[in-house]
Length: 399
Ligand code: 3PG
Ligand code: MG
Image 1 (cartoon, protein in one colour):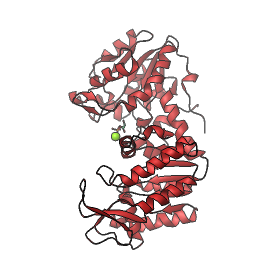
Image 2 (image 1 turned 180 degrees about the vertical axis):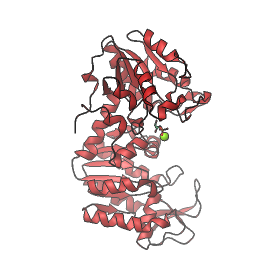
Image 3 (image 1 turned 135 degrees about the horizontal axis):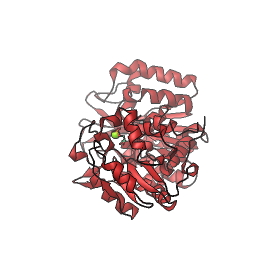
Image 4 (image 1 turned 90 degrees about the horizontal axis):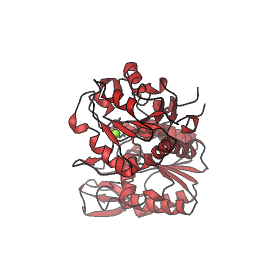
């Protein structure tokens, strides 16, 4: 496949660079409460400034669906970005109907950074309307996409615009693609994957793609219950997709045919109620009472997973093992994450994690920085794990 252009392929001196970033960050009471996505783009933006360009930032915020929703303005994000950059960021308010963006962009001087209002205030954004894409392109001389986490959307500011300007991936997108490719396309083997989360229905394509690629597939979270039930194991009143038992059996058959070992929980932390601090007990799988729920993996499973990871060279992780948001059912996820962190620090494991819940669990445990790479993407990371081409990435390949 042709390579993806990077900013090394662009001539930036004296140019106006339109840069798509993902500023869809958590905001609480008008303040950005998590800077991860902002921190990731800062070095790449500084580099573009140093190369002598003016920067016109495009981004979306939330899902206003083509309408002007004042609560979904990017304005509060502009100041957080300026603070992280240590440079002024001029916010350009616009309803995208008038020409405020065009006027501001035309006047931008090298080193100046503009952030234009939420692109999703215009219906042409999500429709990937070529006319709107052309208007966005007219804001600058080159286009840089530094929003991997929005690259699964074929929108005017992520895909359409790239047809009208010399285009390239920004530094954080480049780093993300490098890390993901190393993990799944050319990994050092054995390659293990941990897939958790509540449901298999949302991860069928992902499981199909991973069984074909990984050596060991470790299944946790609520979705493991469906696999256990599919083998006739009594899981009490645990979360389970009873209409997908056949599907779960098919996944296990495919895995066997492809020499992928599937690991399921051997023991579990069980409770009768789903709440913080609920009375719980540890028991082997197969010993779950009718009124109990599986809410986390137990210590025997933690040990088995650690042993499996000791013989792996690469790990891709998406989804927590248990109900990590309520203690004590975060223990399994945290214990495994600690082990992964330690193996990674020792240079024995390349560990890549992604997806909203996974990153939240790693941050809560204070372990995210010990992983080789933590993706800031949710949906885009999942689609990538499913083996799907991401439109915002594909359009950046050398033609
Ligand atoms: C995200 O937050 O995952 C990305 O910014 C994409 O947002 P979206 O799911 O609203 O397209
Ligand atoms: Mg989202």
